[in-house]
Length: 104
Picture 1 (cartoon, rainbow, N blue to C red):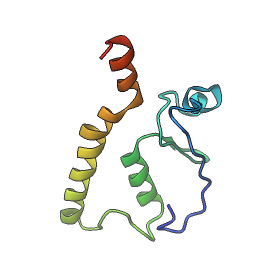
Picture 2: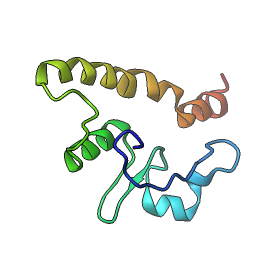
Picture 3: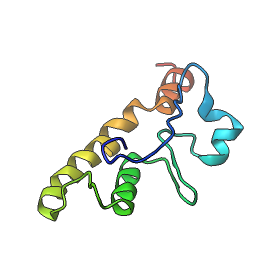
């Protein structure tokens, strides 16, 4: 968000050390207990790509993805590969299920 010079407040959430994402205050904002979370006056999203597109649509002065659809398509392809294929495998919930429930 510093790229487009928006004012924001950053609150770090350590997924292992303090378990902030499981506490009532955070869960009431984000029932999925995921990070990141963008919270506005009337908007909340915990999905990185949805957050980027929301900021892009709301603040048109500085667009993050390219403005042409031809250049934006490969950017979305890479972003979706990360968010849909790579990132879930790093998810703490998956790790806990593998190590705890399945014992691997």
